[in-house]
Image (cartoon, rainbow, N blue to C red):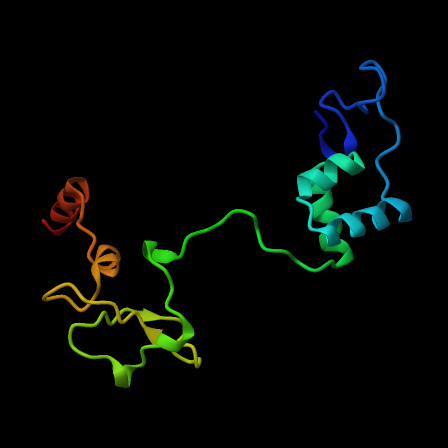
Length: 153
């Protein structure tokens, strides 16, 4: 397995014997950089590009960042906050359209045009939907409850 700059775990290049210590670090030549740019444009994963070029994926990411190639979406899919899908832009809930029974959880920066409210069906007797209630109303643990009572006494 190769480490940083194509160097093996023992500090040696994979094509050298374990007893030979690498004396010259990996260098991004114009040819290797051109190959990186072509593979990046093809949309290959950074690990695959690294394998083809004989470097680590982190070396690829670093070089891509330094030469300013166009960023790509992360292959790791992060879910939207609160475990629900975001509303399409067409369903923006503004203060003037917020009604009783709708979640009034604010979303975004109040100083921007995209500021809105959740708008999902609220939990009866609460101003928020189920997922936002879970965030807003956190039950204190017994240990924290005891500490709070001891601090007051």
